[in-house]
Length: 158
Length: 306
Image (cartoon, rainbow over the protein chains, first blue to last red):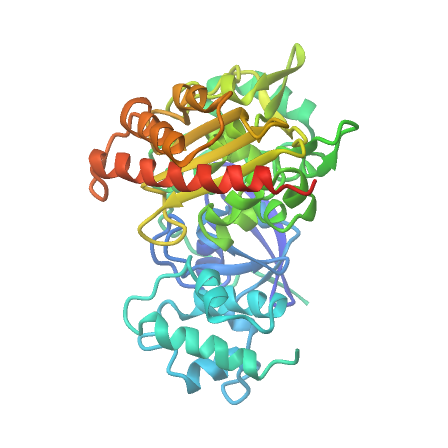
């Protein structure tokens, strides 16, 4: 099968590679670039674990081919914190409000809520629940995830 | 510094192999469709096509990607006040558009019900309409709003009324050599009312039942026009024409609204039932949604400031 040369930016780092057209963006990030923070759950657009930002907007990376990301700027969960001691405010809020248990779904929740809170810094609880309606969590429960989002919003400039 | 693939590997891939071509324009797309024939599929937002490929339900040999055709992403006004939307306009852009809210309020009201925010970032209006899933919101909305579709083909352009566009399960009036390029929503009159209702088990899931309603009142307060279109109620968007006929020419009393709702729910829709909703329950939902939607739509029509 013919491959395509692609160039894309992930977390401000430019990458070049050759991909088969059928390689999903989620698989490209994980297997080719080694960015395994983006998790893969259902691989058909239901669970939200693979959410990444495409030019700042949240998308499901399992519902895009890597070849389609040519020229785009992507952000993944690895780009949120510079170190374990310097978490992104939303990550810190998840830590403090017990917004994760096993953590499998967490990258998807974070990458969904980061652009949401940037656009809507003072959300209501209902708006947060609407924003995360496309992300499944099977252990922590949504209560503490919503609490973490509210906590993060409190610390954000209006 | 540019990094190359750090971990070259050969992971198992879910979708079947295919040839990928990024189309540069509508004309280029039509040429590619002619060249590659039935094995080719058009890739719009991909939010239905790619899952189907991940499951290997669909195995196209060629994917013609429309996402680089910037000319197909626009929200504009026609001279007569109609809203004109390019087929590759993202659902997220429609959801946030003040023009959509003002000119096509039924479309605006339905947008947040379409899947989830991450899906709407990528999903397009044209992709959803051409996919023609009977459970999707946009086909029902397009009929209720009186929209029309512009198709481009080797013979040129033609317009298809939304009510003639859908021909059953995942089937449209588009020829195999045609593509959907634009959708027009006519300007509403000052006495138009609308309402979109749907019920799903979880926000953003496929609806167990849903209805898109648009009505118009005459100067005397009687119903001049009504369109009731249901989703997940048959093998395509289902228009309840007899229920609408019961309303036309009459003042919309609670008794008449209840009778029209019963007509649509008991006799005109043809739901198939599934593990989450029996046919009886789907009919029940349709009746309740129709009553609520008509009350709201007529109220909006009576109190319209436009």
